[in-house]
Length: 264
Ligand code: ZN
Image 1 (cartoon, rainbow, N blue to C red):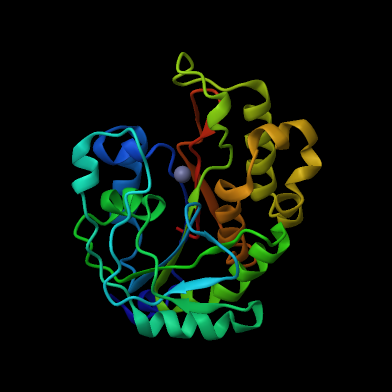
Image 2: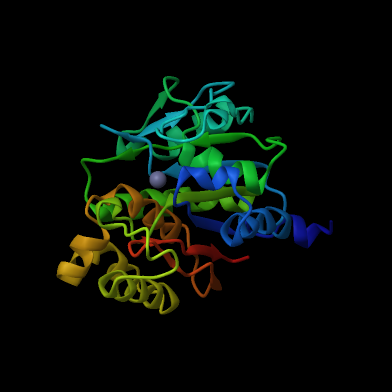
């Protein structure tokens, strides 16, 4: 690797993770995750913001060897035996906590890798040989707060750290229709288009103010957990940074599988 390449800023990725069951599948989406893992420069570490770690206050995973959490039900028994044995990175965690201290961030050793992180990373980095930490989502905070945390994390990209979010732009499990395997409700398509357009035009305020989309937003984002990881990734975006979408499709009417790649 040349000196200039080693100094290159690491891409950042928002993964649309969908069903935990993807971890057992070999499909268009999972093959895309595998490809991205090979395509982007190898990260020195990963900071993941997952839809599935919601806390009061901001927590930074500080365990040396975080456990694998099987935070799902109704899936084949073998999924509950799967592990993602990536090491944590307590030193990186400490630096992230300091960087986020003004947001009240604290170190935390109670959590492990939830399925928002490991079901994606088992595909992207199956050897689990890249240190991984998670930063929790303080669910009491407004959208702007999450965007600003992302901005504070941006500098880690210059050290070769991958900042990743894991959620879904549209995520309404109650409205899912199994007959619409590759189809979208109109409100899901419209909301997804609005978000993608706002990303292309680099209008983060539109993303923060997603509730301006009224009924479309209320149906697409019935609870903010899966949407908010996108705001962290948009927060690390630099001026004029290229962006591209992978798998911009909706499954079962109400599950937008778009993955957003910044700078890759
Ligand atoms: Zn999820």
